[in-house]
View 1 (cartoon, rainbow, N blue to C red):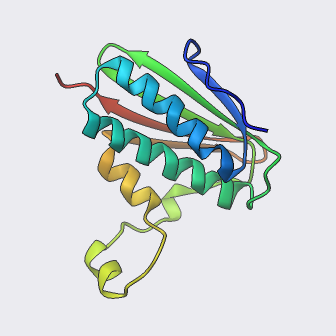
View 2 (view 1 turned 30 degrees about the horizontal axis):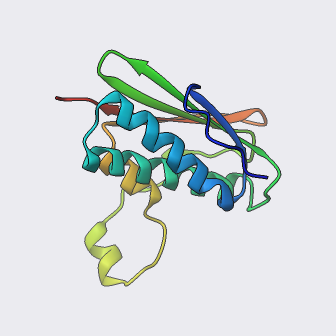
Length: 145
């Protein structure tokens, strides 16, 4: 079941289904827009959050649609922070190698660019994983205008 986007709240909780990605995108778009970002910046933020949530659904929850995905917006001066929490399998970001985008392109690979996109499009990406408890991704975009 899809939840409606409450534009007055800075928190959204949805089930771990890719069908809920549109709800997440609308929520993030609305919040980033009201914070004062440009259309291009909003697009970068939405893409990053979409990639993070897709990774959580596919890898942490193994595409099982009945688990909670919590997205919170934290506003701090000129920082727009998106905190995404899940309760699935732990993720160790340090095990990921830096992406060689030229090699990726030469190999004509598909998928696997989520973390690379988040790090490229956002000002800061932080992971925290507490084994058998929760995983947290913090995506930060700084408002420069």
